[in-house]
Amino acid sequence: MEAYGQVNAFRGLPGWEAFRTWVLQRAHALNQALFRDHPKGPLDPREVGHTSKSVSGWTWKNYRGSRVWPVSSTGRPDRSRLSPEARAHIPPLTGEALEEAVKAGASLGGKRRGSQRREEAKATEAKLVEALKRLQARGETITARTLAREAEVHPSTASRWLKRMRGQG
Image (cartoon, rainbow, N blue to C red):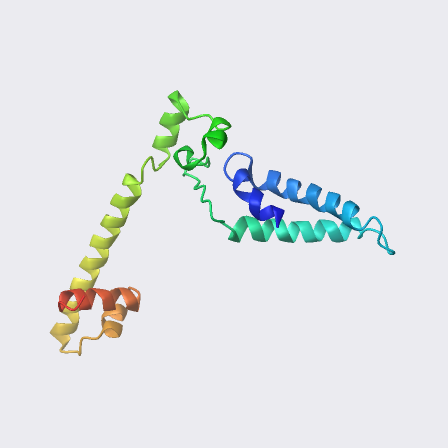
């Protein structure tokens, strides 16, 4: 349960290894504290290690929690979404480091990724239009499935596009 509360503090700069080490240390401490008076004694340290590895791996990969601390393409937490206390621990990028991050494709507001998505959408639409023309020229029935197969796109993409073209969506 503690891992859920701490995982986001390790995202970005401290990283996965630091989180995994923290979970391992907490697991050993809890093992000693909780099973000290147990008739069989504490769990075997290897068992604690395997359990902590599993918990830390799953939590790191799957748990985002209620507080989202997004990590930018620089590998650092997005400081604008952090609390003032957390922001104080992560200095902002400046100078050459900032320039390098921008050259490497740091989102800095998401404008670059948005333009990439728009370009991808235009390319997909062009593929769908060409596929539609080919199907019509062959006299085939136009369905989302045949259009998707002809344009080499996902069927749901073709279905949404067809609905829009027919004025249904």
